[in-house]
Image (cartoon, rainbow, N blue to C red; front, side, top):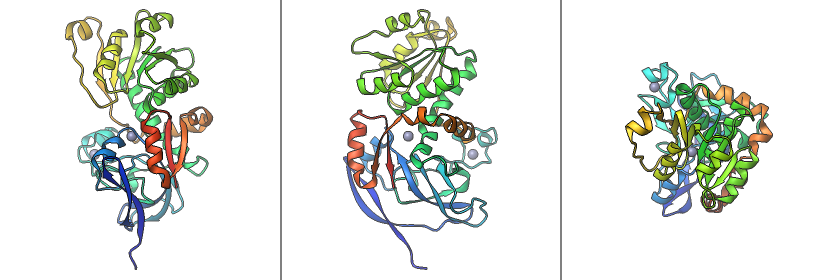
Length: 341
Ligand SMILES: [Zn+2]
Ligand SMILES: [Zn+2]
């Protein structure tokens, strides 16, 4: 059989994207070949754009199965999304359901193996989640960073603090917007959600999703908390910004028994163990991506709330406009940006 090739974007470094030809690999045992239909852009792509990448980036992909290797049971034609982490399914973490903490991870799709900005993506069947054809592919990508990563952050908080009645979020980028939406859907409209940022476009989007926007250029967080009836502090704070100053002000905005969940990678945090943690019994926890098993519940949630969650996607582009899509996205004047093919 003649080897097939695909034209894919190559991240050459310093923001330069060129096209190059890459082989389309047939799926091996336990593998599927997807034709990619949509891939959402993510803030973490910035590193690959800047430093270049030997593999095709893209870790928020949705597509259709076009070939299935030996030993698989997924039908050709099935639509679904790709779970970033190619987990082993057998280690102690995986057996406990913590597939996002796999001890023998085979790959991170889009980082160590070719990802979703190609025309085709070869994955293990175990990190494919079938969504059915009703969701459009761009919508289906919401199941990944926007809903998955944020549902994990809320689950990490709830594990420490089950009676959550208020949420404070730093950073109104796509993950921050996802936190707002998921908190709203899970906790209901009676629980206030405050979100801080400096970007009016994104704060307005957060407000449309039901959050109280706090523009830190004009307002102090403490006064916004008081106005929202949270003078004692919020129950949960979620940092999606990754900045030390944001983490510090979230910690200061927490009440007794409060939990700070760090989702955004980046800077550090200096803690006074006695005052910040022991006295008020607060906790600081990390949250990384999400468990594969969360996809089913989030798929249900997405189907019931398509219009509401769909507001988070503000722009769609073809693959030919990838550079323009990144320019706009990284300038911050967008919600989630999706590349459709
Ligand atoms: Zn991402
Ligand atoms: Zn594992």
